[in-house]
Image (cartoon, rainbow, N blue to C red):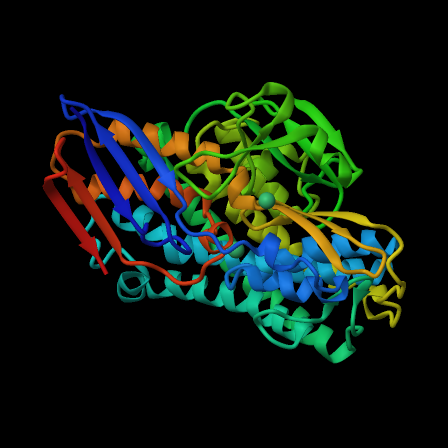
Length: 474
Ligand code: MG
Ligand code: NI
């Protein structure tokens, strides 16, 4: 005799998913799950296509984070060509990747999550959104909108168009940067930094108002995974993949991307199309790890840029080296926005960024290639096999949101246990169940390989399937 609450199409996250909460006879939560319910099979779809098309085709996996797939795909293709791309090409790709991070993190923090922090998790959902923000906190909303625009414009300046830029190609990029375009990018940096600093200062003044959410939003020990530079600093494009334990202590690190198979296995659950990667030697599900902004700021010795490092110092003074609560993804996201803007400035001011040497040309020289990069939401792996003619024979992708799948599921259960009680649904309960997912900023477009948002339907059903309660959001 148990009841199930279903949250269908979680609001204010990207894409489509469903949450079910199973109640026992006492009306207490005994299980909860985060389901990803659609699948388009991109890995099969690309078979037979030439590798030269891969970055652009792979970018079509997702309308939300095409740039992330572009990066991982291009790196896998560089491997297939067996080339070392020119340093300027790597730095230009890096700038585009950081610009994507700024726009994506700004969307996550300002548009999707800050309404909860400004109005409270129990506030009226009719105003607890970006439109409410524009009315009540216009300057704050403007900061979010303009930070997002800053990132989008850089992608456009570099790639020629916002979505699916074909500028990133196997072997580098198709065109060098012009001095004029560089000036346009540099011009936006001071304003973007001011807006990011203001957001970080505001979050610092407010995050302690949510002790219950901090305690229950996926707050448990896990490992962490993400890229670091050779110096152990934060990295989003290249470098070594590092795994640390729940205290931040190093467990494993490797620079050869093919080694991911030695450390990561993927489990499949019958309730979701999204696989659940885990750290191989610890087994499933004990090998649970988290990726994304929180993992990256925990794993890195430092950011390596002044404003982000000052913010990271504040973060560590308050929370320690490795905070367990996923509530702190928000703060980590703002540290990364600061770092990304600073780093874009640093790279743009390097005279070599205008070098005309941006592409290594070669035919396929290997039959297998792996590319690993950091998407805004975490580590992304593309692994391809081609035949001697350069046609795709096989692909595997481990997407960022998948890496967090185990932690998101456990987090949904934890928050449901704490906030859901009885057979009536309240807005505050539902919002917190969704908000724990929003901490991870999952890209459900990537996860499901499907675009578009669904209205949310929440159903509470009795033991015989009778409808006890229902909430709809359109
Ligand atoms: Mg896969
Ligand atoms: Ni995506």
